[in-house]
Length: 129
Length: 258
Image 1 (tube, rainbow over the protein chains, first blue to last red):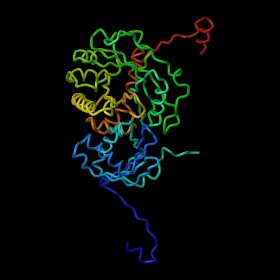
Image 2: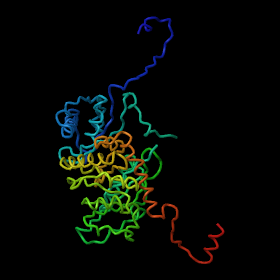
Image 3: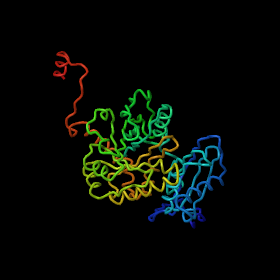
Image 4: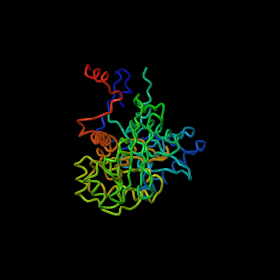
């Protein structure tokens, strides 16, 4: 960032080209529960996802590192970050999770992208006038 | 963009639940669903169930997410065969269904279903360990005739044992058919057992499909099933006869003028 110090130079756009596969994938998921009044904390949600990974892929799967970046307790919507090679594992274990504490539940995967910025908007929700 | 379809959604007596299932499927982005009526000739000697016409069941079809078009609802009959006499070719009861599927329980019937039966879908059982292997010859025969194999995933969500059977049966099917002519469907009884089309395609990777085949299993393979069903009803898809409601000299003349 040398150009920032020199005031007289005009601002330049920086173009980033990612040629290799991106290291992380980001997912926006929401949990739908049978009893809609149930609330989960962020820790409980992450624990629940780890249980799902463990039941499908065993200890090795549970060792898969993923992060819960942001979580909204009211809508049960979460942003997950997972390394690209763990995406299929995490996604399939989310798909096959069907019960949370003996009540039926489903993860709705709203968006998946290698760029976090892409999750700011959803073109499918646009209202075109 | 390909249209996504779920060609197996269970029906039940409770109409509100069926409506719930259909609207959830539309929300998830499925353009077509098929309501499945299961018929097991060996267990109960009932007649073939007759489908409820779609317009009677749902007055207002819900719109599909992402496309401003209503969802298409079809009727499908699945016959669970354990005896060669269970499947009657050209039975008039089958005519009122859009899709026809069989679930063979023995190797002989599987062979017959692949090579001879005039059906659209061969459903692979996912609730028990398969009593037979999928041999290359019948599977290839089915592929040549345009009959597809169906795997359903709702049982895998319900409990862990069935998940094991689902995955092992799926993998053994993929070994012989190499990912072609496979469709993935839900067989869901509750709305929470339905999953979105991209989730299902991702699940296909788990069953041993490649990326492209997995997406085809929820989109273009399903479309070819519908087209196959059309050709089954008509004479090779060329000639189609319908009973005209008004037949008289006046109607004939009008017809000639058109």
